Length: 301
Image 1 (tube, rainbow, N blue to C red):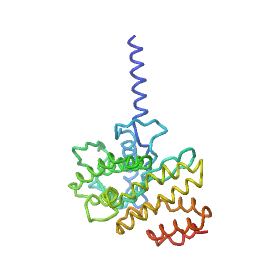
Image 2: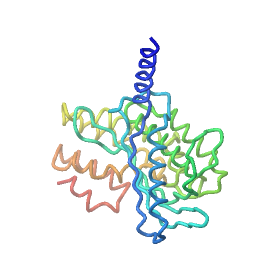
Image 3: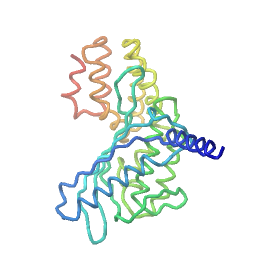
Image 4: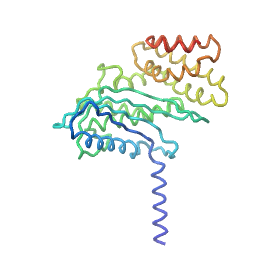
């Protein structure tokens, strides 16, 4: 009886573990700029710690199946490393994707470059997150991105579905400002961690939140069954992108969306639909990102 009870508890534990984690992150570290011979061992330890921290922690009360975990990548370039003080100055390129319904295609939900991915780390450090006591900038940044990834993923499935998780990320931003690192404070950079989240949750940019839902759920997810209907929904969703940009022309949020969705939109509309539809897509994207005019021209062909 004890053996059966133990087996049941073990199976239950494994089942809960398999369903608990939300993220499936792949972490890579580029250390080509660093020549210190001690570096490789430290950098590999850093990579492993970050990846395990992101993947093994249960970030929410939600239960995910293994196939439902959110694929994301953290590509970290080490620009400077002070061996004596364990200080790192890095650039992070983060991207998350989700599958499109009834297809093998994965679409980028959110992608951002963080030029202020700076922190202190030594091999003996344990990465542990407590929302009430944030003392490590590395942990704070990873937790922020974890909740942003989950929140934005949820935004793509239901209208404003990521509110709770984005508010948690907002709380991390507020509490991390006292750490003294760049990226958390207002007016420092419109593309920093504070700026992007603050703008996205701003009522003036509500169109971006409507866009996230309509573009993915009403548009992309319908294209396998009816490409014309899906493309029509995507075109309609872009009116929200246009409205958000016009409401806050200095915000980086509409431009960021345009940058990581550009190639996808070109593939969706190039040579498809009416010329009026293609011109409308071109005009919206060009007004936000005129530097990409030569690439966007493909839409009109």
